[in-house]
Image (cartoon, rainbow, N blue to C red; front, side):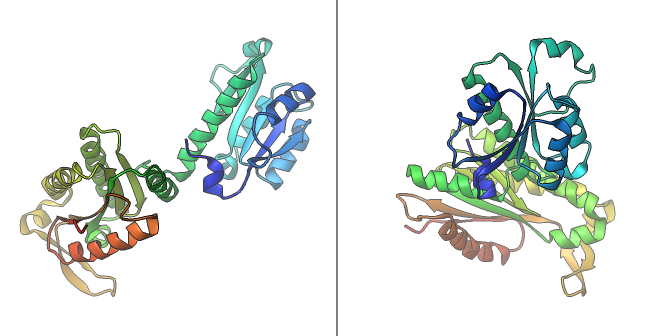
Length: 316
């Protein structure tokens, strides 16, 4: 499980709101001190002031707080757009359940006391994992982003696993965006994400991963012997579907009139997809940076080829 502290590059900052001294000691002792920096507060109003001035990564709030209940603290926290991404956990006791609102709670996890320490730890870790995925996910496609991509590749290196890493991007995507607008451009990105995701899923192998670097750049990981078939499938499906995203006149003539990056009006063909594949067998590469450099060289080759294409580095 990827740790949120890996994304942040520092210990987690967790604000614990409770009057229960025993609970404070139990929770703080569940993790090593170098992983989490704790701030313990015992008053709901004071807690809100502190959270708004120094936002933590997570708030664990006991329902039993003076002045403002834990539930209301978290409700007011989530009402502010800038603080909605803070992971929120509410601690309840069996007698508190009847007072819960019928509309539900806008929190990431509940802890119902009494609960063994192992259960509390598990619920906090689940909430952290969910927050990690949310923070790193691409907001449009919901695919994992750069940090998860790099950490996934580094884990494969550490395990000594042979794998193929494919970089896919769309050719002439900017002119399409300029011509049809960002909304239709987003539809193209979602279509590409679905094609790549479905293709990788169909391989039915344990070693599989799909990520979204950003914009029109995607990556996927497969075993070396499965990647070429997947690339061919992605190319075929993309070429079959993408014409339907053009207006009939543009589709029939096979190009659009738009502007290049220098502002010059030019003819641009129907969108295509280019895939550069780097294969790491017997520890040929040792880090993500080496893979990315090799993929960049292949990407230049694929970009100089008209239409959808995949290029695989078969050097030994």
